[in-house]
Length: 413
Ligand SMILES: *Cc1c(COP(=O)(O)O)cnc(C)c1O
Ligand SMILES: [Zn+2]
Image (cartoon, rainbow, N blue to C red; front, side):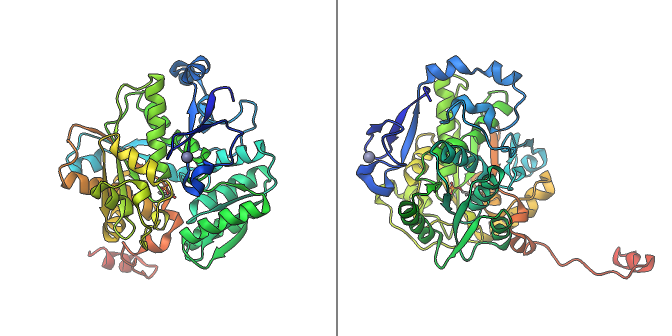
């Protein structure tokens, strides 16, 4: 991995060689999340925008020279990434905007954005010679890990809160992962996984702990920029729980700026659920990540419920350094967004993903978005993940007798 210079602590700035530490900066314990540093000249020597234009690999691995994996490492076979970026003219018109796109990550193999990180986790676990891989998750990260692990025959053990939506738990079990439903919150599951992985020597995929998850997730924004012919958007809306995705958007954009592949930094907009909005609060109060205290968190958008966002430093930096904003949306606004997005784009989103669009609606309402701006909304997971929430937003369909008259009566004829 000659293109990787090292790992830099996001708290003290100390840098380490990639083999020098396990996951985190030892001086800061589990909060010492590190950033992957690259040699951009070395990367430039291996890949260009023109190379990409000719590359038929339509997966995250088209960006392999920009990822922290050895060139010779085998990629898992599942087709992760290169998800569609759809123009959304009808949504744009509703909001009085000129240019709006939605990025549909629900079409990934396990139906969420998390496949991007889990694909890299599986590669790194195999590079490390691990026999078992583990993660804590609200549901999607574990589903992604279960699926990606199954694709290469690597055993996975996962820890999710017992309240996780049924469809996600079904994914874990069907893919053959060993599932433990934690009698507690996601935050409890996270702490437990740290201990368990250390005790048993398992490879740990935990978000905002394992530094390579950000690097997998940054492929989302790399794709968006490439799909827009390297004319970066002006504003990107991201649903935020732990803050790893929003941090990855920032990281991907910084990589592209360093390579000179895009010429401006988009404003990054973080959207949280009102019942789980510690980053909105920290941003409004102007405090740092290390000053944040855990809050009790609850929302219909289970994938973005996090009482103390693990990647809070990167998540705050993403918004502060790009002149973006944090926005809180209510559970009702999130639920309302599900059918609105679906009916105007054809994309069915789970609540956490729909929160992203609900945040755009609110930002437009508050006059934060210029109508001329080119805006992207990241839709991070499929609506099929949580049917129970989706069904709250639509009426029960009528039951009709199997004859023409009955249909005519229902049609109001
Ligand atoms: C995990 C997840 C998020 C939030 O990502 P964080 O990195 O925790 O901020 C948003 N949407 C979906 C569908 C997710 O699974
Ligand atoms: Zn440190």
